[in-house]
Image (cartoon, rainbow over all chains, first blue to last red; front, top):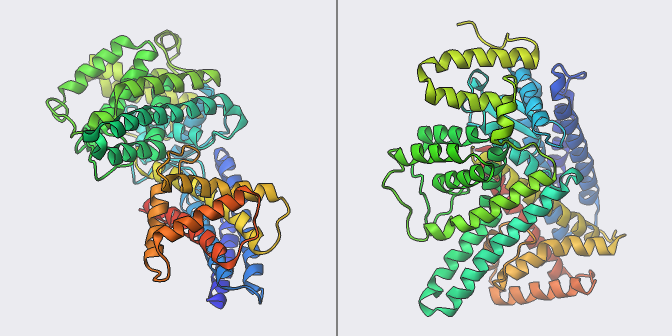
Length: 394
Length: 134
């Protein structure tokens, strides 16, 4: 094993060096410079760590426990280099107009909302809807998304994952403190329930479920609703509308909850309910009512409900406390949050305004929506990149 | 919107813990401990939440899924005829107490248990990584 492990490590060092060679200097798309630096730094660290491991393995005194340790470290570095190649280097090899546009669009969003972090990158060739790759700080979006306005609010949700992954940054100290409060609120909420269940003989059998729910909140559910809150507070009703639009296309059971199988996302219904609470906190009362009215009319919502313990998993009174904490944290870190007053003053070239206008037109003048969408995208492209050449001729 | 983002952030959280833990364990195994308190806190940041979860206490100091880590350890122990879970838990709690007293001179059995913890954390990283790769 020791000799083979040595060869594996040497091979990975070589792969790291080759990957570095694929990063062209200077970068063709300057907006991806931060990504190039991130990839290069990560690869350099991997190579350094791998060379250190070679020292361990070449030591004649290395025993079985050392080999276990080195193999584990090798696997870790392998995963790291693979993810950098997959979610970083692949993007650096692409050069097209819409990639530039998407990256400038994100720059504008981060500037408009005063997100106090370096600009994340965008890859416009996702095969998996919108998602964020934390290893390289890249948001992946589907290939044609720059030609539409109704799904783009999802970018704000992914931006939320970027912010959440960088909470140790000193610029986010206040937000981190409020999010820490959120975890305490979740713990207190379910601890109280567990205490009651412990005292009531007939409720003891529910304790493992309550534990499992609390564990899920801690590990993944909270991050997901945090990103929903982030998007709703920053871009307003457009995010909730966009959410309905996406769910209408791909939902299976919006009330999904199962005592045995725990998905990584809270149910779609719970997330929608949480967004509505965030909108009401932001002053969008009328819009929240409209959204609820449309939601309850949907064929996959109307008359449906969750299984037993659904309300235990996704309770309104927990949501309201979390929403307040998240909003306060964002305000304390000077993010620009969306409100009816702010929205009314924004120019057409504002992304927040455009995304909300799109939904207003969609509902009020659906026949003119496509024309509006084309014109507004052209306007945005001209404003953001100085050119609308990323729009294909129709 | 896709689950990939969540897999990614879970992977990062687990990887950060694994790296901190292994960095400290590597120093112990190669007798290169310079900053003892840093090594102690790095090891404890992983071991304590596991110890608490084994005793059914709620730990919010880490967003790692302790239940998966414990299941991975149970599986490992079940494959070893010489040891049983209860004894293993006692040994693990003894290691935690020992580290809390700033003692990091471990015998081979204890290093083996620390490597088990590292492997369990590594399994968790692998699980998220496989999800990430689709």
